[in-house]
Length: 160
Image 1: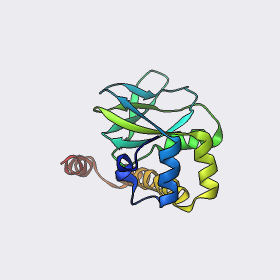
Image 2: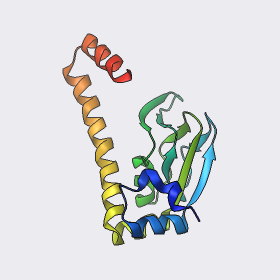
Image 3: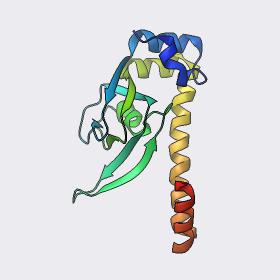
């Protein structure tokens, strides 16, 4: 059981029923910097909610080269792992701790049940998808409509 105080980063996302559900069913795991949290080809039994730290989500090509898809921060969940769980498929991404992280692990059976029974959970999941979709559109727009010097300036500005 997770104390409700530990769920503070998610208090504004979820109603009290959902906070109670998470507190009763989830577990907390910690990972050190550079630990692999989710790997390509892995069966997923849990959905991560990031309680503390940053996680890089990567895709790998056939030559073993990594492409950074996005970075998860406190209060985020991984849209790609949600997709794998909903489709009952293996992971297509690798999630690596960018620093020491603490993660709430939600069993996938609960994730599916709550999606159908709890509006605050459903909204959280859909907002997570929307945030990643918006990031993807921004990347496509940058590649399609900006010159190299403009892209470099945007990248440096975003990093600051």
